[in-house]
Length: 500
Image 1: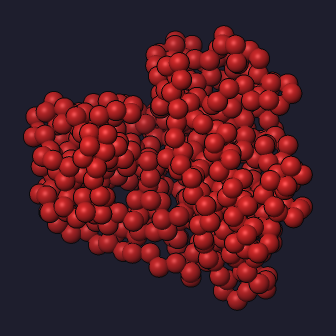
Image 2: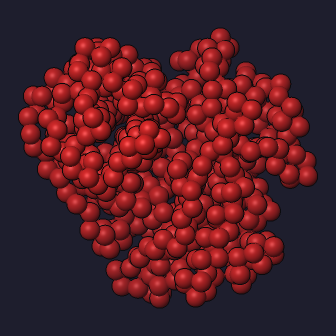
Image 3: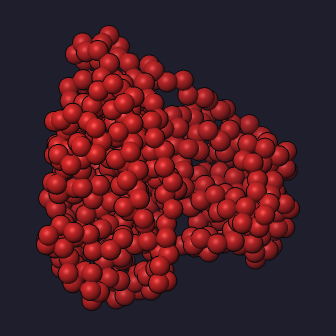
């Protein structure tokens, strides 16, 4: 690593419920230093209009501008560069002048219902998986695009930009398609790391709508003069492509040593799996609903999407709407005292995907499976966390079996790393040590890729992770409890409840 003083990098990290701008101060001096500071947070509130659920993308962009202004004020100077990561699959459409053709549609909108069957009539699921390696999710970009065929917006579109690329375009005026996010569209061949033209052609999807592909670390333009004026930054300020799918950035920030580890990137979703050198495109993997998404430095994120803390987030929203708001820290303490594995569900049940009364749906799922409905908010919370731990176990075990790669540690990163009970239950369920942290993994991975691109630090992923281990203090959980009880619960989930 070159000897440099700590310099600031700005990470724009947009999640499904909130966005934030973080400043990472990075130095390559000696063993290196890394410090992360949140300078601005803003809500992400989807809006339903005329029956369609949209992202309020202009509000999010305004939050980004406010955050970049705060980043400059906090650091006392413009950042060395800016990187953007967000959720996957969703996109904005632009006309020939570059104007946005309506707010992007939210992946939880119902417009893709029935699309998978239509696609399967043209491309059988095994053939689609062999070509793209993507797990079935009803809202994959591919299904969104087939659902939009014939619409006025798609007919008028000259360009399609995934959400992080749309933000970058507004900041710089330059259009590109970052590869880690593109790999979630179900239109990328993970072997060639390029578009799967046979899939697109078979389904009538126009790949010329997409801007040229670019990978993590590639230049993505400089802030436009009006953006500099709006943010008070002194240019030139470059934007650097990072792992723009937030999970790609989060996995880059897993502080692992060696390759015998599994990861669970937790938040609204849990993304659980392994980091591999090449995709696994077997029919067995397809049936297990595993995905091959592209990561930083040519890696493959072999993982399963799990419903995640969305289950608890929706419970909290429901209780608040019912006039019985819950304080999360207290709720988790009370849930820890509830007997475990009394009530649990298949966390991946499609019944849990849409917004709505989650406590009722969880109770109904328990009754359908012959288990008692959980009692009160603490009981529901324990049911959710037990169910997520079981889903984590199943994904980690399946990933090892399908890939032939054994692991001896599970790393939990993202917001769930702060959830002591979830981490403890995951260790118990998996029968493996869990290392929890960093909670801000996506922002850290974003910053580290920028810092390497700028020459502030050097090396491959193992070097970036060594810097993380030197500057962070993750918590470790050893497995405990009744292993047999987890085995029995896992068997009931595997044999007694349908998977998506």
